[in-house]
Length: 337
Image (tube, rainbow, N blue to C red; front, side, top):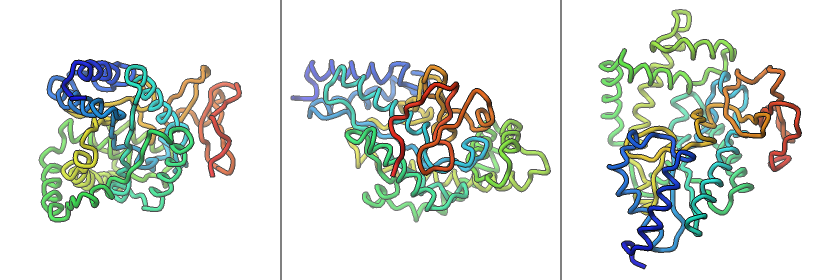
């Protein structure tokens, strides 16, 4: 079947309508610049349809639980937040299958090993997170979610950023100095503060720092943390440039829609857990409300509350989920080995 037949065109439009529905699309049509990226998305859909192959989506996601006690408590492994994201992928696949039976192939690219050192996390922790996440995928979505190491794909495609790193460092330092104090710089400061390893600081104190960092600086007594954040801002600028300038996705997945978890111009952004839930799974803890609906909250928002109780699974010492009320909770499994 040729990619430009009326049947293919019609199917592509119907699948696009699913992807652009508010249940799955996170960013506004204006923010994603739909008129600009629409031809690329439709062309990718048409190529998959012409081969009767599943629609392909790639997303950079699930690097590690951020080492922030206010956000995730003491947990370092995936929890119900990540599981809820997997279930959201299952819903998206079902919605696509309702108009196109071959369905969806969802490729998750882990970039944790490329950015862990920036935020003070060691390689073993990233490896354990990814291994646990893969077990969740293997139990709940083994037939359509595929996990990949982003750095391994770069090496596979011989994308070597080493010769560009020094120039990127210089560019990052220039950006840090020249843009300091701008809204862009302050936003980067707040995002980075939420990612750096602050496990040595009590969760409530970290929560206060996060709330008070709106102007891009911390109280004088926290200058040592502020300096750490400044260093990480520059390092992450470099790492992010390496990821996006040496992106193996176009060659590894030429027929895929390259989606994102955050708003980026020209990209489809997807809700990770539920519509209106912007907090990413690795930035919080997974919770169930009294109607059994999934949410992601910061740990300090639920820990110690009488209306939320921690749910553990066998062999683990940190909560896998928090449940509102006293109704029995069925997570779909008792333990992971």
